[in-house]
Amino acid sequence: MEVSGAGVSAVKRDKLELPMKFAAIIEYTPDKSKIAEFRPPHREYLMGLRKDGKAAMAGPFTDDSGGLLIYEAESQEQVEEMIKADPFGQGGVFVSWTIRPWNLLWVNFDLMPA
Image (cartoon, rainbow, N blue to C red; front, side, top):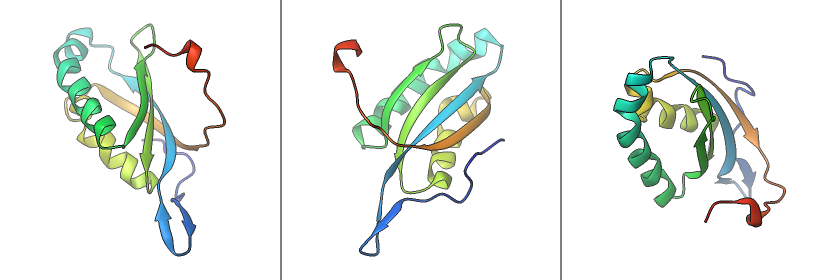
C-alpha cells in the first residue's frame, strides 16, 4: 500500500489529540461482480462511520474504478484501520489506496446533493 505523509497525526492543543481530516483515494478491483456483491455492506459500514463522526464525505468515481473518502481521525494509522475493516477492504474490492492529511477550507453547499 502507498501511504503518503506517514507519521502525520492529529494536531495537539494543550496536550489533547484532536481529530483531523484525511483524504483517501482508493482503487477498486476491476471485478465488477465483486464490487456489486460487497457494495451494500460497504455503504452500511460507511453510514455507521458517518453516524459515529468518522466519515465526512464518500463517493465512487464515475467509472467505478475507485473512490474518494474523507475520514475524521486522530491519526493516519486509524484511517488505515478503518479502510481495512471496511467490507470492501475485507472483500478484496480495495486493491490500493493513498491517504493524505487534508484541510477543509470551504464547501459550496449549493453543489452538494441533498
